[in-house]
Length: 103
Image 1: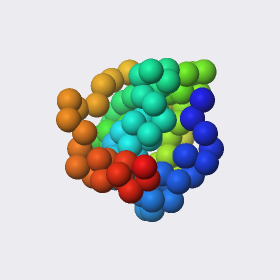
Image 2: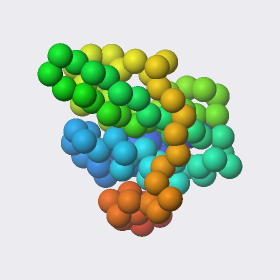
Image 3: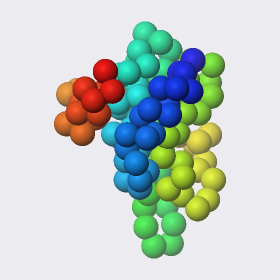
Image 4: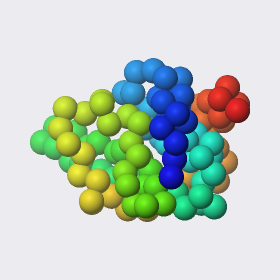
């Protein structure tokens, strides 16, 4: 299970959650132990009348949703419709820098 303290540290470091879902999720995934810790990266898309919203979050080893950037939405995200996905082969620079600051 990902500790509340670690979630709080990552959340504080990213600041405004808008457009930070991939970076926050990838950094938390790495810091919390990733696949070896039973954590799964999740991805989903919501299409509205005017836009398509792509979103990333984590599913913890016990199946609970860990979404550090959920506050950016004014509606409940449909987590049940998400799919397990892997992150890019090489960690994105923003996530790598976040991991370095918090390590």
